[in-house]
Image (tube, rainbow, N blue to C red; front, side, top):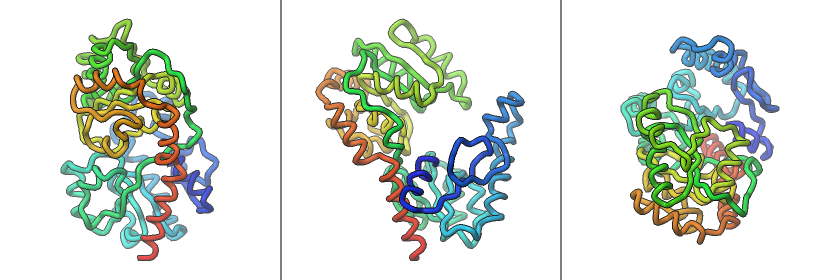
Length: 321
């Protein structure tokens, strides 16, 4: 959201960011309460209802100021749709999760007048026609990750340690290809046993788990990698790590699910595969891809500036309607 807001400001759009009080931003910001992570640092584990309470407090701050804005762009889960009421047609909602399960079906059925921007065509296919406002692929700050022409020997995996992302598959593929792998990411709080059961037994000298990584370490991991392995086992709505790798010039070997065929240009910015054997074969050809060309495709398709222009076009369309 910060990249989008900053890029919109560069297009002369007045932006107010609704965000926690400990947010690091130079944008006009509304929010009197700290983030969940700040509360956990201060108090340790918090009650399960705390995230919902924080959401309600932020929505109350929005309710008090609704008339101040031409467009309200929401990235929350559900409750904002009820709060917006008659302002729903002058709002836009971006959903950053899958939309093919019962919770979203109920949500869309109850709010057919809520405009929703899909983050991929794959995601849009699960959004009712009445809610569809358009498709805007994610973008990131052009300069967040540096291009690296010459990688190290390793391949990378970056993502939650969960059966949706399948780091265990990534380890098997790298090992079969004779390449070391470095893995970064958090252990999924919704499935904490997965890492111990499926991933930890596969770790070794050629498969190193780095734990969670910040932007600086992410850039080092991705930029130094010969390839990013993205062996997803779910209908991925976008997959931000793919474009983060491309920003470094690093090709992506990704499974043909969800948004992958929209994001990875097969044979240009990586390879789209359907099995572990195909992924191993793709790694054997990874040196054929032009890392400078991958960076150029990132700059053409996945910058925050491009994302902001696409969203601005949707805002204007909603206001004209």
